[in-house]
Length: 308
Ligand code: GYE
Image (cartoon, rainbow, N blue to C red; front, side, top):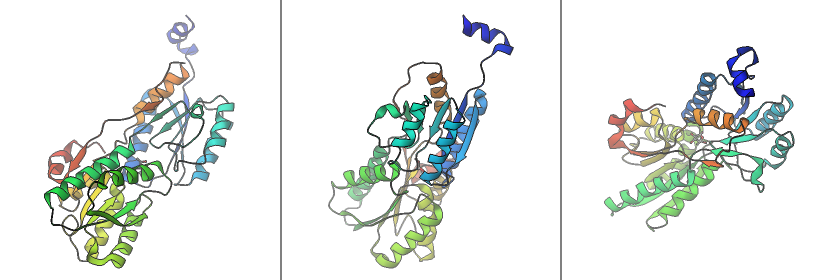
């Protein structure tokens, strides 16, 4: 009865929901799309969003979460830069009775009651999909030597750990597939380019395949490969993850061979989950999203359909 009364008389309508959201940063096209999705969904739902950019630093996220607790927001949401080191700040949120929703990236905590829900992709599966594409490629090109260099995401981040693991697990089936170098490029174009330059310098023509944990690093690496006088997508086969527009453009130009999709449009799911939590409705502990794999030959056809 109280609820319908409040709804009928605007003056008594509930205060808008306040969500404090700590974002990883602005390191990639994926992240830009993710931020836009969350801001748009909050706006559409009339939710007040307190948005903090952590610039890829865990310390900044911990500070932001503490400030959300001090401001007594209704819900805290965040995309954790790295997996470990969250126990104490999440305990503080729990003691303050503020529910925490994880989006995009997971945390590694012993006590699962420190968050109510985790909404995001299965990164191990994405790594496996990248690996399966390469296994198929190796089957079709049995005489080709396949030395792989890997550009890892941010050290300690769930998508870096998991995409590495899933890929390694699958390519282990073919002894010809060997990772010769693996280093972090921090999910950025600039770092991807820089590390690829170093790989090219030390390995020379020995590199046959690049596996990049995101499209931005692959796009940076493509520049490095071209500057070294090689043809990306041909002299070096390139596999990456995310499926952002930049990757589809690179594929249409024949410079990238395949991208494994990772959906950044988590805003509507996040807002809905926050509303349900505050309304006392049960929410699923884990929500994953549907994703595909886009090889270069589908790029031109798919490009106009891409939403990020
Ligand atoms: O793949 C990458 C971004 O956490 C899934 O972070 C996200 C990753 C995404 O920087 O581009």
